[in-house]
Length: 327
Ligand code: ADP
Ligand code: MG
Image 1 (cartoon, rainbow, N blue to C red):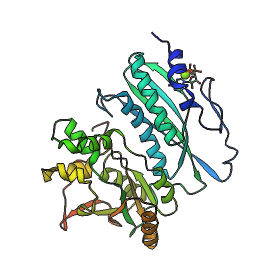
Image 2: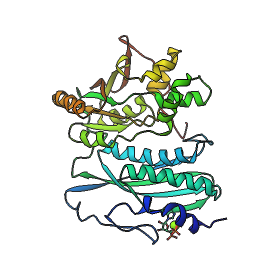
Image 3: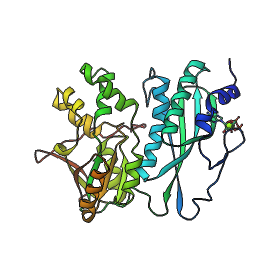
Image 4: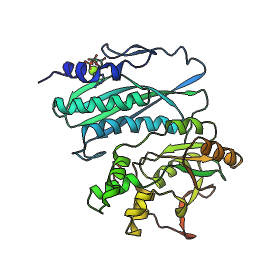
């Protein structure tokens, strides 16, 4: 049985994951990491976030170690995207039920692939024994004063989402046995649930245009509500305008599922953001020129709360995002 130190050496210190950036003066192995921020001094601000994945809560128990590793880092990268930040380093606090070397090898390999893809380096962490839980803290940079936040949406701003909405929730619903999927779309939809693509590049572009931004982790309505609540405004979105994938449409046999999946389902990790009216035309042109799929789905209003219209009638929204502590 490998010790905690064997695990760290073998699975969390390979150069592919822990020696990829030249701004890390001292990485894994000491009491703390040392990072060189001299290049960023004055022009940039440090952006930091932590996200935890608990087995059985954030992913089904039988999820592969590759998917768990990917998603654990992806959801953190997505937070950087939502801030308009460029990610740099991360730490990994992992609680393992046992020292299963095959599991660890698959986890570590997958983690290095996504870490490399986004040029982020693992600089430290903590390894403990207990129920499976992965907590990643990520650090990145934004140009000073350019970070995207949730509190600056203004009345008349246009509301946008990136990509398509509802795919991950549909995959989850199928996994939970609530519906079945057509064979040819299973791969795509499972990928959307297990391998969300952090929208870093779009976030960087948005820092020039958007008045607010959030990543969709809890559900479109719930996350948009975070923007409206924080900005002290309200919003109306149009259900028909919400972009759905062809795989989603292909599998939607029951229209009653649209509201729970598209409005309340989470896990897509697309961005939801607001663009001031006077920047809309230029933003759409630049987004198109850079091949970003972005769709205007509604507008910020002064009347508080988030409404959704379908065929000009207000849709009743009961379920609103996943809550860890139900009251
Ligand atoms: P300490 O007792 O000083 O907290 P640890 O024994 O927990 O140190 O860890 C030793 C070194 O290994 C530290 O540099 C720590 O950041 C790193 N480390 C521990 N667990 C992980 C992990 N899961 N991923 C990356 N680095 C880790
Ligand atoms: Mg420690």
